[in-house]
Image 1 (tube, one colour):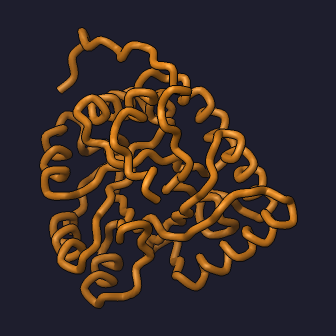
Image 2 (spheres, helix red, strand yellow; image 1 turned 30 degrees about the vertical axis):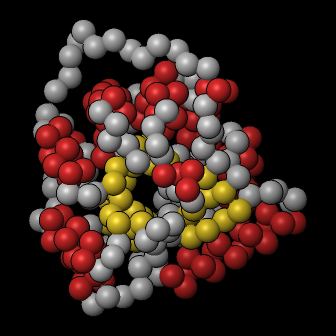
Length: 246
């Protein structure tokens, strides 16, 4: 899958490339999940993302039946609080809401019962699977989402340990119409060396449709500055990223 002789992309002047102004994966809404715990922290993260050049955030708090039982109502309420705080602080940052759905039985039930799902853009649905083991519901959920007109987006495919050494499975998902979203900080090795390698390979194979910050805390902000100097980040900006259509 990977070659030790693979050459890194040549450095590219990112100022010549169209920037990403919309982040479609973040956990900056206050008090909903393992991201920002309060409005003050959310403001700090928002300021950091503005400094990085973002104009719009699509906020995607976790929806997990065992841990984060967020609903459209709770997510809207948190977004309203943050919008009010941004206005008071004169921070020019547009907020929209969606969610990062954990692929479990509860999510499958939401799909089957056609509950309201928080999509973004052109009916994109962001979902994640367990990190260590594959979900038994993946194929069924993808099929049913697509049947309902949604476009499934797999969050950070480079981070799933059960996929390591099985790159072909990601290619198969991509061929079936699943869009792939890479975390920008994966390019720095922040999560692991393996995650970095998979992210690089996905970019080389032009299989990345979205880049996301997956911002939870200030450590992520600090690493994002480093990531933007990475040649693979520049290579990703050369792709027809769908962030630019949001």
